[in-house]
Image (cartoon, rainbow, N blue to C red; front, side, top):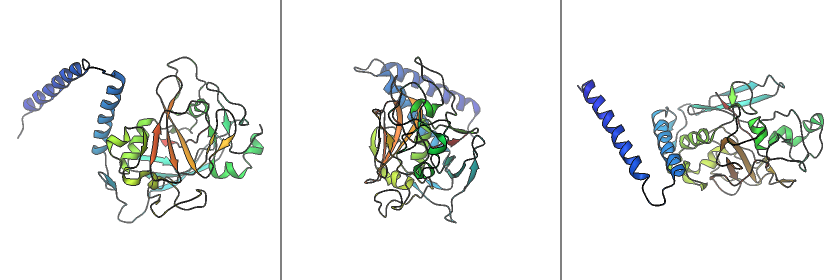
Length: 294
């Protein structure tokens, strides 16, 4: 039997070794402290993901339960009475539809990096009552600029915002790490989850997308929606006005920024099975929001 003293000494040695390692790394040529902290944080996240995997997960892949069913249900937003489907994916509970909360609406010609704006694809008016009657609102929900997704006017750096964002009470705008947990659960490696650009390992994008051509312009047999996430190609509102890529792309905000003008986001594309992660879009773009249960 291992003594408690031995365990304590081992833990202290690990902490001491890590401390020395971090000090030495800081002296490396071209050392980037922020990038190192990000990667170190990602390693911790991946360790937690391994520890919390459940009976539906095979590390490095994804396995359905024996009954081949998903835990899902309905939730009603008390703010406007809108009902949403939700689905349990690993340790997380996600909305299985795009957020449709619409306190006001702007035409695509009006936008801002700092003030909140809400859009409905194809709608160019300013009437909420008209916008919610459109087919695109019913199917794809609302496009939010980043301040609207955060439910906060952006001013100063760093600025403060509620974790909940535009989501209903008991839910929140997912962080970049929340998205990584989802991706890792569906089979993406830690290295891919923490990298930028298109990540194709284990076809995680195909496990997230609606599997037929009802809304996507094209699908294939490897698009399974095995997660129940049911991503829809809602397109986006461009920073210079106009709506683009309905049926071709799905864009989703996260709550985490890097720098003063860029936020992490995810993109899915009809022609491939990957998931895109990057910072290439500024806050005035209009993207979809998926809420995650607290």
